[in-house]
Image (cartoon, rainbow, N blue to C red):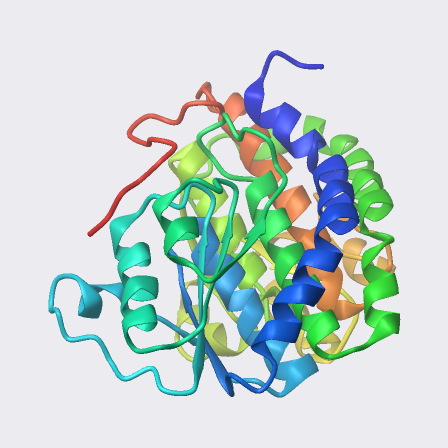
Length: 345
């Protein structure tokens, strides 16, 4: 085991996910049985990394459950004191620490409006867990590094299990059981590429591209790069980037592109061809060999259903950000200016 906190926590992700799948399926089944016919859409309150998990939920519940997911606007509940009507909603709070007052306030108001509430958190004694009707523990132990890694993937898997059981789809549930092995394989394949990250030591800005289920992944990788390396990293969908920002691309312009096989494949392939022709420096995360060949720093992931690729695709992003921090002589465990628990109001 390394002395480095962040690296250890990246490596712990297969075990964390295995534990979550082992111990939480029955709990989630019981929660769903008590929520049956009590909601017709979902509101999620979250900040930071957890907000990126909520973006994943928008695609997940929409595609698999035909349920619309809205992201809460916590300032309406705290600063403006004008909470919206949440009739018909299941209100979910996602937070590793469960401490942030603005997230708690959304669920507290939901209970006042007699709406069912669910927390996804690592701290069962936290204010968020206590205000919730139901709770899904993340099973990550202590997350000691400032930048979140295992809490993010655990949040994604919690949402994926919830969606699959809600859908009563045994084939989807069985796919989840392969995740620990596939995450382990992704870590091993990504580790082999770390020596090449020094190529980007003097990089000052980067764009991260994802679409569909991996729109969330683009935001999470961009966040990790910003937190750990002080590089200005901006996330876009490949569609939005075409609407103006593509004008910034020039020779050597760095782009991380998340490109697994699936419904977005053709769009992302065309996008890669376009920015490659403009001279962009492409870092590609994919299970498609022909796309990986284009990149001077390709990260391969195992083949897996598209809806689960965000759980794998984020791992090379975590490892890239951590290694780039080291190349830039920063401490990846304790980025300057950040704290582990951030409380916003």
